[in-house]
Image (tube, rainbow, N blue to C red):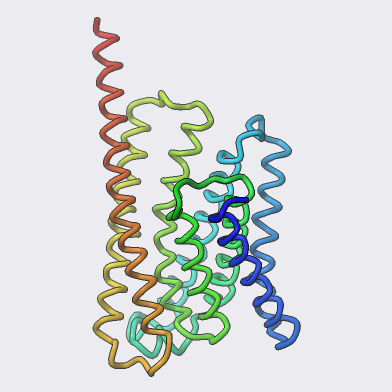
Length: 274
């Protein structure tokens, strides 16, 4: 076991021990939804491995489960926001007190379930070594999310803020769809389908990922004086800084992939004409 695997495995074990401590000793039974999330996605992982012809490809299985998580989470977030909008209207919905101190109906459960997914995904990536580099960005990303999500759930604060950050899973749906399609062997999809896929990828990247995260960061900075002294604001700013940096990297990777795919399609067209 390498240093990277040892470190992140240890942090995951400590995280699990902390959650179990809260549930069993502090009787925080509502946190069982965190465990339920991990079990749910691990079960789906096992089902894919059992039925899929690509069961020997851990990355395909992992990405398929990630696609499910993106669909479940984005659907949950849209439902929570739409329900709140219909029930109480947009007035005051994004006030500081509403985002920090209150919790919209089903927001706690949705955040807990998603927190369970990130723990499952961290374990799956460590188990099959689905990462690269001395400081794997994906493992760091999951660790930061686990810390932020778990502390918020323990203290029951900033739940609504974190629900807003998860709107980015709308974009992740199309990221994972593209990846699953290519790993399943459908690399030469019809031109129109590829164009629609890329349009949705770019549209949701800006509308559901980049813009919301930038606006949330700006809101945190604007309302910084309204936070009480404690770890909430520094942790929130650190988490959003990390997300915005990852978004920049993701945008660059998307652009490179887009150029490669467009160049490949142009090459195929030229070949057929010859």
